Image 1 (tube, rainbow, N blue to C red):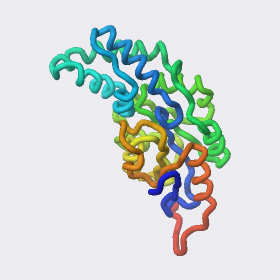
Image 2 (cartoon, helix red, strand yellow; image 1 turned 90 degrees about the vertical axis):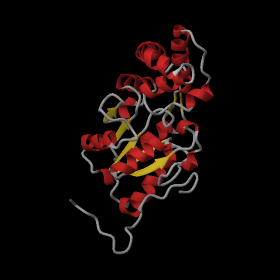
Image 3 (cartoon, rainbow, N blue to C red; image 1 turned 90 degrees about the horizontal axis):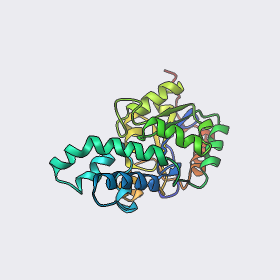
Image 4 (tube, rainbow, N blue to C red; image 1 turned 120 degrees about the horizontal axis):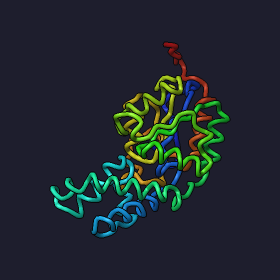
Length: 249
């Protein structure tokens, strides 16, 4: 993997038929929404607020993990467990109230989605964010029209990094996992994509649980969704490797 470049595996040459894209940290910077919703909840349960740097370390593994992580550094294990259900319900109410209000679209997202669509690739958004919040956010930023499938963290029993949401997205797009590429900002996205048998690309500007993106094992780092589309287009246009065969099963 090389920074800000992408070289997809040879087996994807000319066979990519779909792209599966993460939401938070990949298409939209939602960190300040998370901070506002969490601090609304923390104020109501009477404990100290969180800042953006703390919250970024928790983003990406679903609302339940987010709440558990925030409570764990503010209360004893017993207190955190006791407060969890109420805290989660309050947080969901707070988030529903401000969803998208403090978020911003990352550069070249719309251009990248258009370019992927122009390549003839059906798109799925697979996120650990609750489905209703994901759908609302995509609509708010004018991105909903690009996606044939949207799966949230509550759409299937497992969340990323489990491959199940990626496999279900492929089924709904009517493609094989090896015919799809996963694009995200974190290790969760790459782990889920690789476990599903997909090619994986990583953007460098998201959250990745507060860790450097170069530590993520993926097929390449791309500077934006538009750069991802350009890398995919080049791969699709590349001649097949000598002796390569294309499976039809």
